[in-house]
Length: 120
Image 1 (tube, rainbow, N blue to C red):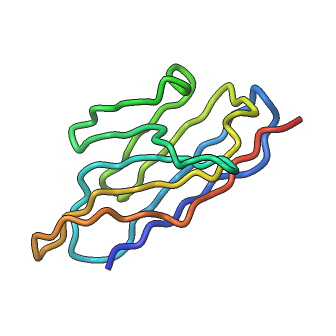
Image 2 (spheres, helix red, strand yellow):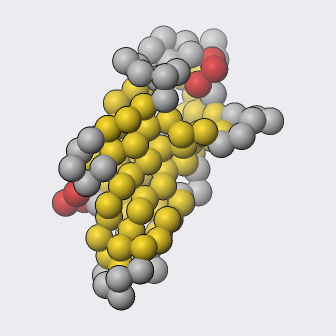
Image 3 (cartoon, rainbow, N blue to C red):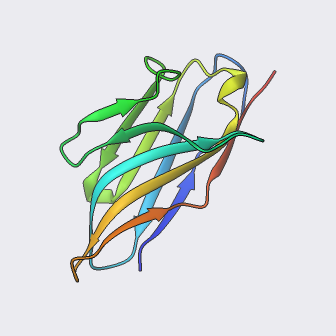
């Protein structure tokens, strides 16, 4: 069984920065793609950024140039560096990983979410 735990959320002023982390734990798996999503109050969950096993990245237009996704395969960890934060970035941020198990099953695993609040 694979579990994801996010951390790094909190309250930050507009223009500030935060770095989110998401660590996968468990045994008998390989991680392929890693993604960050967010869900603001009353809104649908939306894709923020993704990174493949070959380090190809993609971003939502709303965060391009401000957010950077990266991964550390040795630590089974994905990061989201968020700079120049705006009040519109306020949301619960979730990581999702595509996981291949030793029994050759492909699973999409979600974390529990971490709250980011951008406010003065």
